[in-house]
Length: 107
Image (cartoon, rainbow, N blue to C red):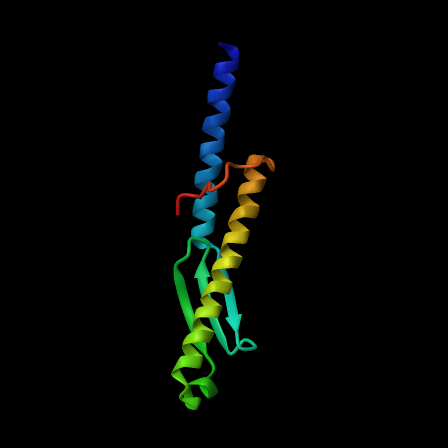
């Protein structure tokens, strides 16, 4: 029974650390960019877009299709950075233990 008690204690500690990590990710902001930083998208570690900045010269050019592509690339860049940070923080919590394939944080 001692082992079971120890496992339950460790599971509770892991759950507490995971909850703290999720709270930190909600506050974390990452910025993705494209077009040589002419388009910047800032989002939280949980994937919420906070800001979109577009250089005035891109708006003046009037090429909507190119602008749409640059925004899409910047969003994907920000998302990749947020996911990388989440993985790094999760790795710290789990001590580098490999997680099952397809394991996703509850965002």
